[in-house]
Figure 1 (cartoon, helix red, strand yellow):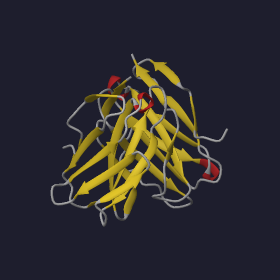
Figure 2: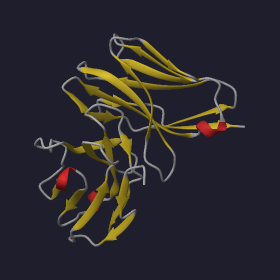
Figure 3: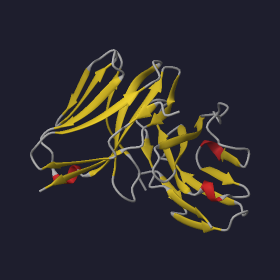
Figure 4: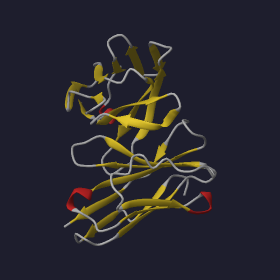
Length: 113
Length: 113
């Protein structure tokens, strides 16, 4: 049973436009959420996170939004750049087991020049 | 090096053989994690080490899987009597404290034929 779901396996956007990557979760005990980015043949790298006490966290071009009632989070990248092309993983953890991340299957983002 | 180092980067083994995968965490990091990513799947938690505490082995898929961390630094993940379903990328990660930003290595690609 997938507790973290990324329903879009891929997304293609034009350079300069907004990229919106979505993630849904089913476990209401999750209270910390992260986004990781992965280039081919490299390990995932941490991008941005959000605690359940917030509904938005911003870092430069990246903003994560959390809707707890809908059990939904999204990552916005504005403006998108070709170097953002990668697989983006959503991950979640619970207080007390914050070392144990549950990941989605990832969304491949392609930003076209 | 400055990052998490894993070896081998690629391993092809025959079904039924044992394999050992090695992880060298970032110097000074007390927390060490093993994840794996099977084709088309998200990252799956395997095991977590924190200092001298007993490891959390709850993610290991079967008793053919084991891991050690010697001297609080290098870790070895061992898979005995490998099966084809063990084929995956095995990712090691470390962090300075539990729940802090996790840094992943590039992974060990295991193919069981």
